[in-house]
Length: 461
Image (cartoon, rainbow, N blue to C red; front, side):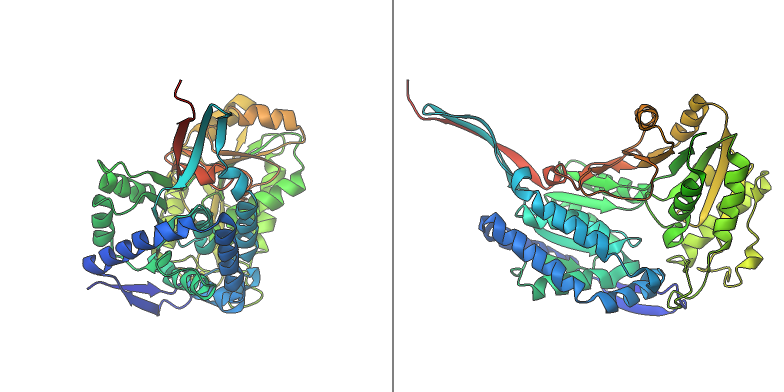
């Protein structure tokens, strides 16, 4: 048996540990999910929606303890109150559009023919969830999958094991039938074996590129559909007519919030040369107001990274950039809580270029590089010079210009005058190494259902 430990970034101690399921136990869990799915799908859509909403409502009653648990598990300061705003908004939106999104597409309904395309659940959906926004990223697939009539198995990240348990508890308390939603603790070997055995009908994974590649290899030849969101290196573009105050405030928040551990966080910024110096000066002042410390302290605005090894990656990228000529504008000594481990001081780098890892590889931490540009073509070339493409943030007062430039950026979402945000009415998707597939919006239901055509001829001549 494999024991999985969760090391808290707060104090470096074991917060909890769980024993992973054996191969036989995991196979039995899949069998329960498959046995429960048909009767769940047969229930009226309104019933499924009501039970899913009840599960999320029950989760909300646990808010106080969940906020503390998140701080222990992945370091987010308790002052930010968890992820309930997004969880509730996404659940409501996906519930509200379910009937329309799942409605048949009718080609003909006459006295001679019925011709239509219906959506039916795929069967058993497997969610492999990440630790950085552990409730939100799960909800993105869990809610539409259950509403559409699938059963769901959730394997949460080892850094946020308690999240899966809280979700399972909430939905069980709400009355979801046994086997319809199961939280499972699995090691990599058993997970890979289940995927290879075609245990699931759809797999959603949020995590690293290497993790996505491993899942693709395991699924090779099984024809199992995959949804893979593998991170980003999201750019911000500040044009000459940008509202500088708003741009600094939003882009710095997008770079530093959650200790920079956001898939769509801002990791590189390109500022028109006419605004560059002032933008940098204001950004340094903004970051200087952050308070690094214990996430349970109400004054803390920047907690530890989720694990010391994640912080080590950011430190290495930063050190390499400085050695190659970059300038660090934040004195780490101003952040006494930086302990060389999970607690990491924020950093702004200038004199950077794309030969540096910090401008090309995902950092996933509180560091951002800022470069000037002279022309729009130069800015677009820099924005597209990345193996990732999740979101891009354009700062201008000209919506037509933002749309024009956005059409030329290789990304899944284009923002104007905002960043680090997810709108449930718009599909969440990416290009290049960010992965494939889509979640949320009406298109999110397409991933967890399959089309079925009905051609019913009512006459014989």
